[in-house]
Length: 248
Ligand code: OAD
Image 1 (tube, rainbow, N blue to C red):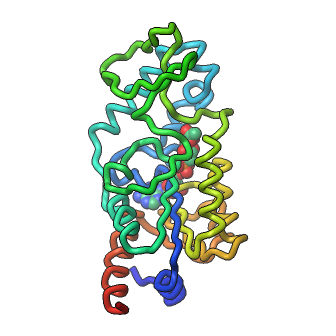
Image 2: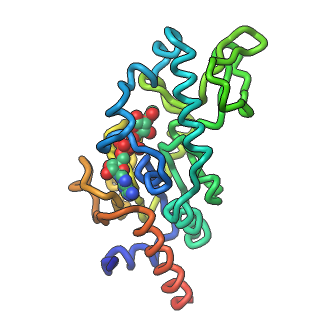
């Protein structure tokens, strides 16, 4: 892929770069997205599975669905997109990775500076005393109970729930302070995460979307790179490694 002169010039002088990622970044690892054909919300209604009322009315059903997703995620590996994003931490003076993904693949790829907006499927907590339970047997399909009697739920943000306050605040600060802001593999349909690229744009960042197809915010960003994030990010990082070395 040819990168535009404008993108290259912004990246070569950027001191602070942020990236917002969505399910598309993990698609090449074999984790299904939500809204693409064959995506999770085509087979299940979010209100059946991803909200607190659903969990309280049928905890075993919701728990077993998350256990099934854990099994999928346990068996997949980070792809070149995750690896390239981890590399970017070494390339830029400040690099902030903000993710809507709960699959932990960014961490497994080596990223350190990760802000998780929608939680992490590897964690659980008791709804009564909030004790954390992070080592659960994925084959256990019936919901677990805490010693205090409370049900144990996955530590993910469900529909109708607030995003973690500190993480959202930090992500907004990243959007406001970035020289370049990437929005990668997200349909940008779920708020408040979808506002971050628009906040970045408003605060003068050069906003770049990487996606296999246009999204609802494509016309609002500075540049759209169409294609698979694993391929584009790998090429971009290779290019930056060479260009930055030749500048130094
Ligand atoms: P979506 O499923 O809404 O969007 C995935 C996006 O990735 C789409 O725009 C695809 O075109 C794009 N895509 C697919 N494969 C790709 C690839 N190989 N490279 C680049 N792009 C690709 O997923 P999200 O935007 O992450 O929230 O969804 C946001 C939130 O909605 C999720 O975090 C989840 C869901 O409901 C909660 O569960 C709270």
